[in-house]
Image 1 (cartoon, helix red, strand yellow):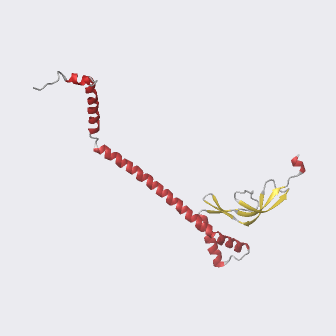
Image 2 (cartoon, helix red, strand yellow; image 1 turned 90 degrees about the horizontal axis):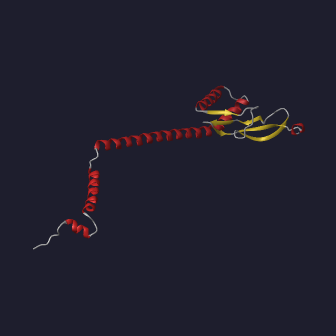
Image 3 (cartoon, rainbow, N blue to C red; image 1 turned 60 degrees about the vertical axis):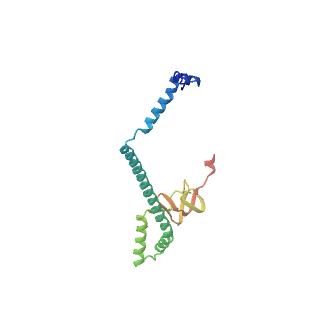
Length: 183
């Protein structure tokens, strides 16, 4: 003969639980199981993955294009900087009257080409002195000027892409301070 408990609740109560307590965790577990086993629509999931990959690829393409443009500008800048001594020689030849014939057309062609690429010459006599763009090698005082001014240009400066590629080498004239101005 086998003995069976009068009810299952008696057995549960002996462990400190009631029948209601025993069912509550089971219901939560069943709900969690049903939530994790509900199939997610594979079309929605794959569409989201595809959109994410497309966005990543578009960002990659933009980054590569931006990097390519930066490398291109850097190569042009480095090439133009290497050509600056040649441009200086052409300028000196023009100043001394030795820029004639075929050499004149080659020099003008080179100057127009570097100009088209974005190289700009600066540094003219009478221009206001800017220490970020000019390198002063001599300094004089004069009452004829009101601000520091470039008097002589020994070597022109060049800029490319809004940056100074080479500072102009100049002599500077600054205003002379008179005793009346200090009082």
